Image (cartoon, rainbow, N blue to C red; front, side, top):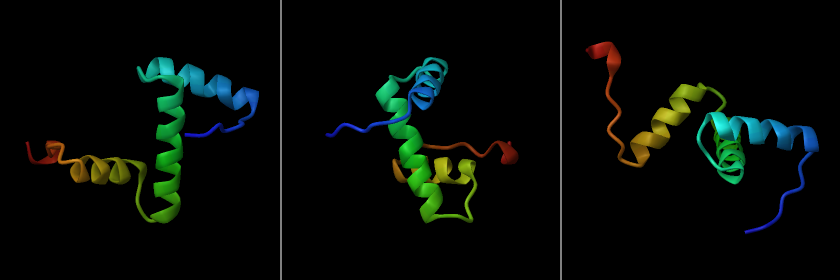
Length: 68
């Protein structure tokens, strides 16, 4: 674990987003960092495709609403 220095305005945005998403401030920042890293590594995938791939990799059953 380490300390990451971020801009005060960005920290405030993380704080507000964490409240909406029911995550801790650290968990919200980690989520954004992980998604950003995955987006850079997979530039052709959308946000939703990245999240779905991560859920599938974690063996979370993701229902296909289009097939319903």
